[in-house]
Image (cartoon, rainbow, N blue to C red; front, side, top):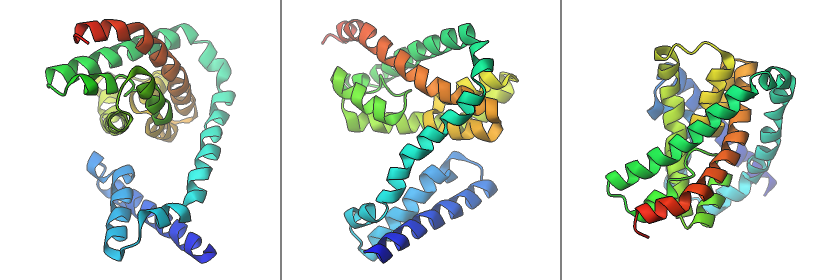
Length: 232
């Protein structure tokens, strides 16, 4: 059993490293490690006939390490706390506005595309990190699995379009760049922002945390209005 766990972890790491190398050569969303690595592992499991439950049990150590990694994001946040607090008015107003726009844009787009009322409710938490988004979706009557899909698509799109937006909007301040990545791409955005710099990563971490709180508040304030608008 120990050998199986070691092999499962090594295979997972190998696929991730290979995906990173491919992404360096082909820096587009389709070749993102977050897409290529899971896809490669799924193909391997299908070809080899290994049940997903066995693979999941073998790699549970990596899942447990997510908690450690999440806590580690607080280190640059602590180091740059003073700088961030000097911009607190801009941060609060930006995140509050961003959370509001994300909800309204998501609901409006879902209804215009004819995705249905359930999808419109499920898209409300799309701009916050996955665990909180799923819980919020359950609380407001959405479909958690559909919410998870919307969150992933938002995160991938944020990481993909982020550099283009930074270039065309001429964003230069590290705090602005970090807030954009954190609010627009969640945890993947945090990782991308850390590649830009320590202050960018700190800002993104703060955006993920504070943005989630503001989205929850906005969701419960706006839910009666949204339900009335949809005739529910």
